[in-house]
Amino acid sequence: MWALSLGIAATRTTNPLLLALLITVSGYVVATCRPPTTPWSRSYGAFARLALAVLLLRLGFAVALGSPIPGTHVLLTLPEVPLPHWAQGIRLGGAVTAEALGFALYDGLKLATLLICVGAANALAGPTRLLKSLPGALYETGVAVVVALTFAPNLIADAQRLRAARRLRGRPDRGIRGLLHVGLPVLEGALERSVALAAAMDARGYGRTAAVPAPVRRVTAALTLGGLLGVCAGTYGLLTAEGGTYGIPVLLAGLAAALGGLWLGGRRTPRTRYRPDRWDLRACLVAASGAAVAALLTVAASADPAALHPGVVPLVAPSLPLGPAAAVLLGLLPAFLAPAPKEPS
Image 1 (cartoon, helix red, strand yellow):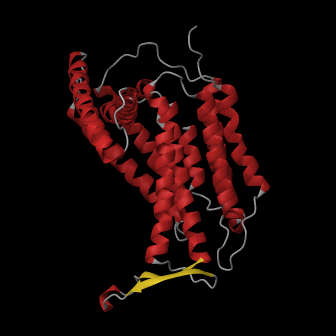
Image 2 (cartoon, rainbow, N blue to C red):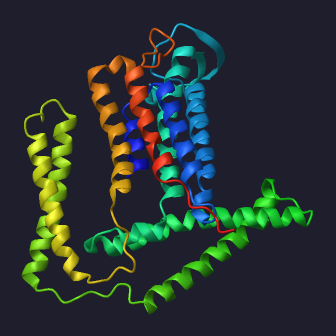
């Protein structure tokens, strides 16, 4: 919840200074709080490299394909490829302006920050603990999501282990040749792990459901579907100027119906929890710190949009608004409340 709230905050601004501060906060909390020995704790670096690749790709598209942002500060002029009349609005090459690069940098950095926040969630949240916290109605979906979340970190750990083994043997671990020699064992290990996981889940009774009367199933489906539609309609109302009057009531009604459907749906999946996690004061503070960052930046984006969305026409240097920056620093609270467990000596 903390990491995804930081991701929501990242979508509310294009100010590169605030986005860099969000990346710094998430990186510091991950370095302080992630478990030292779990496979998924080492996936943060992979997400950071993916975010950098997305940012460079966005800048490359702005240079090669141009940008709709008008600009007067021409940095360089590339050879332009003439296109047919049906491809109007698209160009290859031409003038590259500082305004277009600035817009692409702000836009790409927002997406990169969102990816890094997702990487923080992947590095900090243990999949098994996440599965135990889900309601019964979402249990089967939660199993699929948790298996998917566990799959990527294990692939990264296997690739790192195989590359280290090849380096110790004096064999290449980079380039196309190294990728081909590492990729096949990684995929083979992933397939074996999937088969073993499926057999273990079947032996433990995953997928078993209890008998529920047909009227209860129909009411559950109606409440869940109607609640989700209400949430979508209420969210759309909040995001548009015309729906300001009905957005909040429809959203609240949809949430209530969806929660009722989830509560009734949990009766189909009776299960017990071994050593359930307690939602204590520390957990509330960790979740509230991320939610506070998202809420305060949402309010700041409405109150002072120019500070959180610096313009590029005319091209000006972005400034750091002190209020939103102080709100982002609230995200450091988990580093002091939930430090990483120490390894046994």
